[in-house]
Length: 246
Image 1 (tube, rainbow, N blue to C red):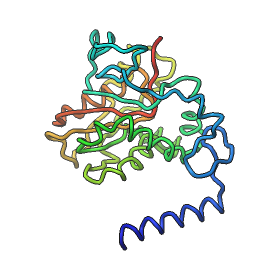
Image 2: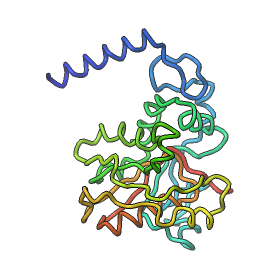
Image 3: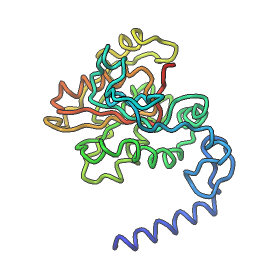
């Protein structure tokens, strides 16, 4: 089947789905024109991250500056190379993220992927491996899906030159929820919680970690540490949203 024919079949399939199951905004539940669209009343509340920002962790600066790294990254350099996010995690996007994670609004990945392709464009073009931050098997059974894996899988379809490893990392320790923990407690909670899947080769590879929210970076740092131990030459992180300290 030619590429043009595949696109036509896909377009007709999407039209049929939209006819049978009218698309709804993943944040508000209001009808929208197509799958992945955000209701206009909700869209205006989203705060997208634009330059200038920290070259290391992606935290946006409130004004133009020549500083390549923020104070936090200078004082406590992250283990990963770089991190980027599409949105500031605040009241504007919180409902969208929570409905995706806990409300079965999994079609939100159609909204996220175009944003991630823009915010992570530089990293994506040079990535060898795309993989999600994993859930522990017990947590996966309870939630029924790994939100990071859904995002990573959809994103990987646009980058056929990069390998996609849905199980490239294993969570070998059943950690408690990171919510309501401070940075020190989060670091301790995820310490030695991950292992690289021995079926894959990471030696001299550039790896892109995918997750939904970058909070303190404890989980991403621990994943990066594991991947470097497995031989990765570079580990970058891409998330839908990033929590910003005032």
